Amino acid sequence: MDGMLSQEEIDALTGDSSASAADMGEESLTDAERDAVGEISNINMGTAATTLSTLLNTKVTITTPRVSYVTLDDLSEQYDRPCVFIRISYIEGIDGNNILILKENDVKVITDLMMGGDGSNTEGDLSELHLSAISEAMNQMMGSAATSLSSMLEKKVDISPPVASLIDLNDSISDDEISTFLEGRIVQVAFDMQIGDLINSQIMQLYPFDFARELYQKFIGGKGAEEAAPEPAPQPAAPAPQPAPAMPQAAPVQQQPMMDPGMMQQPMAQQPMMMPQQPMMQGVNVQPAQFQPFNAGVSPLMQQENIDLIMDVPLEVTVELGRSNKSIKEILDFAPGTIIELNKLAGEPVDVLVNGKFVAKGEVVVIEENFGIRIVEITK
Image (cartoon, rainbow, N blue to C red; front, side):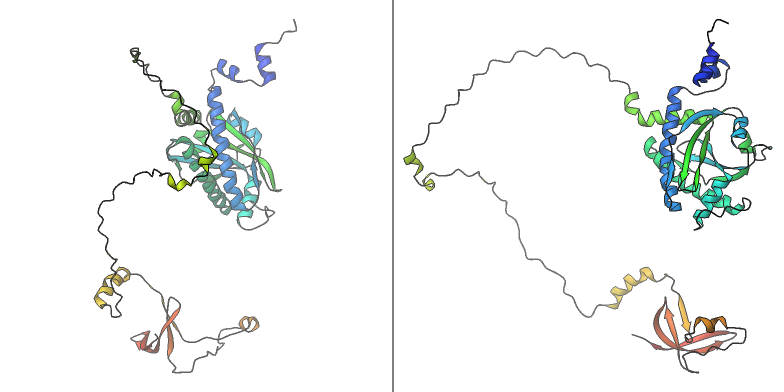
């Protein structure tokens, strides 16, 4: 032993696995691609955290991302219990998909907060209600992140509704799309997520290498378009200008003599003032304004043209037989056969309401096997 460390040992101590991965022929990203993916994820999750905070009415903090490479075995070691995989597919602007991973207890807390609870109702197994609620939360979060990504890339980016699945990484994965997604090495972007005093956990975002590289290309094309644009070809040198003929030098400005005090006492009105000449005004035809008189008798035909626009608008017609006021105790005593006395007499006209507004009175009639109302009075 000569006390010297090998390159592999140095890489292991410094945590630099990119060189070792390249030597082993494993797929990886360049430093520029890693930085771009980290910056894009940081902006997206920052916007998503704001949306989630508004949705849960609780402060949500997501830290700076950490970009690394993982395999299915690595994920199995990090998540030793069932976790929730949320698959997000981009349908416009970007071609690809990614996966968000949340811990089972974190999903229960978020779901309880969405339902109006305090986040403590986390007992029992994860149900379809939890998966549906977290899918809706992620839909709003990643929808706002897609809007932020659209501004960054200067093009419209849209996603399909996220799909949540409960996955046990220690068992075989039945979802073919997720199983195919997790084949080989993938890009992992990890965030520390804190939701109030309830959650202090980690959320992960997984990208395939092809999708991560496409994000980098879109990012460079959108953000660095001006930098990437080729410089214009140099223009040929213009011929040297001919010397201009010498212009006569302006006479030096003579210093005005001081005014005599006697002159200053003379009225200024004696000195004519030069006013700027106003342009001659062209002849303008000016006439008094004329307005159409407001006549009391407007032709019904003119009103008919306007009301035709709303003739097919549906309105709700309600017939009210009568009303009665009861206390809560009396209502709780209701049973089949209970008779409620109304404030209308038998045979008295009933009220006809349109969209809740009283418009007419009528009497109840029977049309074959249905009840009907004959209008007897129209209110004004």
